[in-house]
Length: 162
Image 1 (cartoon, rainbow, N blue to C red):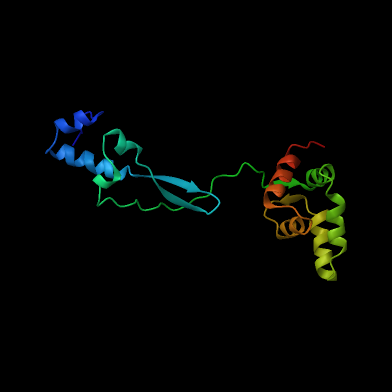
Image 2 (cartoon, rainbow, N blue to C red):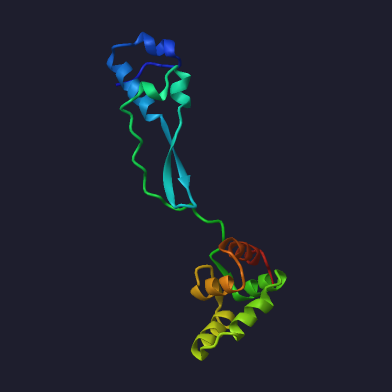
């Protein structure tokens, strides 16, 4: 069923007692919340928002049986951060950021010979550096880089042409 055009409270009052009025009131009740994505928490949040019902001269109290919407499944936003850069780009970005010496010192300080050799391979022998590399994430944390700092380095590295 198509609703009549309802732009004001007067429009709504003209159809009082009709199925269209009931349907529109249901729609208004559903407008008491807006969904907002919280990327930090990795979820959606139902935020109270009375602006639409207020526009029609109602308050939240006029909809005592209204319930918040079911929250949709959260899907993280696509990242603009490159997920892979060449080893040369990564090294150049670390050098430009003044972090290369800290990274090599981190690798040199690894006590376990096998772990040190694997770290050396990750640092010097791979073709590409991946943003999700466990070694890379561990090394970044060890030299005091946050996840955002690492994102910034990957973004800078992707722009380097050697």
